[in-house]
Image 1: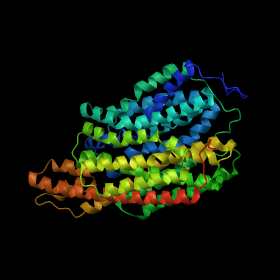
Image 2 (image 1 turned 180 degrees about the vertical axis):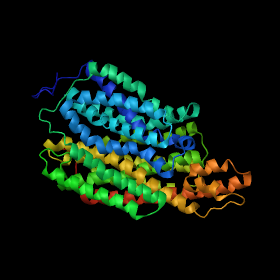
Image 3 (image 1 turned 135 degrees about the vertical axis):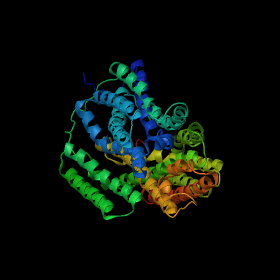
Amino acid sequence: MTTSPTAGDERRKATRREWLGLIAIAVPCMIYSMDLTVLNLAVPTLARELKPSAGQLLWIIDIYGFMVAGFLMTMGTLGDRIGRRKLLLIGAAAFGVASTVAAFSTSAEMLIVTRALLGIAGATLAPSTLSLIAVMFEDETERTFAISMWIASFSAGAVIGPLIGGVLIEYFWWGSVFLIAVPPMLVLLAIGPVLLPEYKAPHAGRLDLASALLSLAAILPVIYGVKHGAEFGLSAYAAAFVVVGVVLGVVFARRQRRLADPMVDLALFGIPAFRAALAINLAGIMVMFGSFIFLAQYFQLVAGLTPLEAGIWSLPSALAFTLASFGVTPLTVRFRPAALMAAGMVLSALGFVWLALAPSLVQIVASSIVFSIGFTPVITLTTGIVVGSAPQERAGAASAMSETSAELGGALGIATLGSLGTALYRHGMADLSVAGVDGAVLAPARATLGGALAAAEQLAPDQSAHLLQAARDAFMTGFHAVALIAIAGMLFCIAVALTTLRDARPSGAH
């Protein structure tokens, strides 16, 4: 039976069933978040075994985030039509199957495809679970707490993902990082029909498949063009893909204006606070995710840590972010969101300055703690501003756009900044020569730092030392460039916040 929130002023209190249901849906959200980061530590190992090109390696890492971002709107509309619980359970089953297949991938191409399928399945989790929370918890206080727990589950996934990934890679094989998703999905499939209510929107708009396809067709060619340009140099071929993506984006926007039930309500972009909050969210997350992928590679490929050690060293910044997020809400009582976000981004910018100058592992980790703490007001407040600035009847669509911008920002950060790092690495290694070593042996070393480590194992000690020093210097050039871009990104976000969001309030503020 389809249920809906009770009308009237009296809101029923949640029962044990709802609280157990909250736990049931928090676990897949945690797994969904883990899948965004857990693969980072496996990159050096899978690079040795699957031998992907530099472009394929970037696709393996970020295709998941792109497919999630591309399908969030589609899955939100589909859930309204067929039922949120049904969509969640279908997505959980697909996620479990795709995770199993990904774990046993035998080629880079196979892993890219399975990661894409994981992204499509993952796109069902966040909108379905948040919508079900709104149905299950009618009391506003309980609902606020439930949503806080929902957000915390994503943070918990980010915190424990690198550690669990490090442990698994240390004692098993790289594919084991995918298998950790299977048991929780099986549990959700078993208890979800019992604990979770079904919900369909009473006046759901129809699913427009053309819009869903256009949204993907606009995003992926642009990213492919950027990646191809980074791997093979700027060319008309790479530029053509970017142009095609932009043109399809224009076609998508025009279609949304004509539809009675658009996937993206473009009228919302006429609200200054809405535009500004989305821009800050996307740009901020873009530089944060771009930085974290370089940190994960630095730990193992430059500092020489094992996967387990890398996971442990990545914990401080993740824990700092999670703990600092709990302190944001009390601060909103005393400070306006724009001022609070600007202050946080100043701290983040200082953290990135430190990162660009840090000479050692300890200082690099310390700088990551600083910029992670500074970013907590941004991630906490922008969603509230987006939803609060939109008319009440459009709050659901505004929330979906906020989540899409976050996912897209993360994927863009990995793609664009990762591509920049790859390009700078290749430029720095282009003229590398090692006495007594054939150029064909050095070809993998000129492509990626992982390739340099593999090539060094075949060389004499003095040749190996020369190659590794050059490769690590080239990698750090890209790493420092990303840190400088992150500083510029934070300064841009500060300017937007102080000029456009001075009077903005998050949803529910008075």
